Structures are given as structure tokens and as C-alpha cells.
Image 1 (cartoon, rainbow, N blue to C red):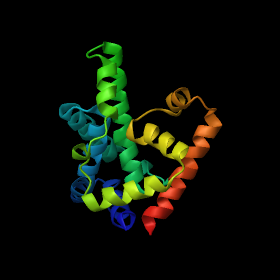
Image 2 (tube, one colour):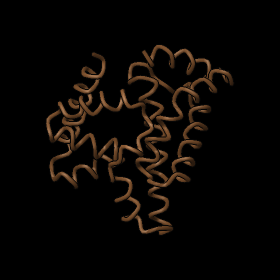
Image 3 (cartoon, helix red, strand yellow):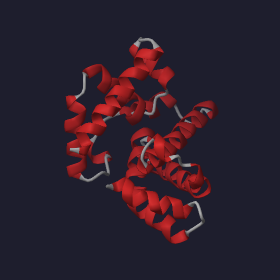
Length: 179
């Protein structure tokens, strides 16, 4: 249902419609902030990633391709990549001990999740139904913000295997969440 609401709004944003952009912001900013906060563990960094992601959405709305996923998936991927950029930038600049930042970002806390309890419960239930290796690969890639290469290093499995686990796990999640 979200996709049916967000797609027309995104198409309007591609034509520089400010009201549509505001509507997308109101519908998705909480989820985007939650993803960024989960990855960055610091509110000020999460706010920065979320703000930069919305700037990118404004300028790149016309680049969305409908067949490659839902609008929300596209939007979340933008904030996720912004959060990864911030982590990498801070690591290069050695602004903080990146290991401390990454360990905080990987800490699981229900309080850090801004999604509504019902949706969180449904997602958790669907995640629990996955094979443990699929669940771990998805967790590393989407909740901890690891690249596929980093997941390969962590799980010590071939890249093709990791990509298959993630793809099949996401397909299973999509089926489960649509019920």
C-alpha cells in the first residue's frame, strides 16, 4: 500500500512539486532517521544523513526506476548510502574511534527503532522465519550497513553465496510482510 501512495508523490517531486516532496518527507522521515540512527548511533549524524538523503531525493527523483523496487526501498537505500558515506568519511578523518562507532551502531535496542510497534513486530516475526544464515546476511547488510564485501569477510563465504542468501531472504521477507 505504501508504494501506491509514494509513487505518485515521487513522480510529482521529479517535476519539482514542493507539496509532494513535503508529503514524502512526512511519510518517510521517521523511518529514514531510524535507519540512519541505527547505523550511525549518534542523533546528530543521523540527522545529517537524513537531511542529505532528502536533498538527493529532491534532485534525483526522476532517476527512480519502478521495476527495481518500491519507492520506500529506494528512499531507504539513499539514506543508508549516506550513512555509509559518513562512516567512511569519519574513519578516513579519524574523527572518532570508528570501532566504537561501529559497535554502537550494531547494538540492537528497541528504543532506537522509530518504526511503529506493530510494523516492528511484524518485521521481527518475518525475520525470525528466515534461515539463520539469510537472517545474519540481511542483518549485516541492511541493519548494520555493511557492503557485500564486508559481509563476505564477516561470514567467510563466497560473494555469490552471500548475494543469493540476501536476495532469497529479501524475497521471503517481502512475501511474509505482504500477508
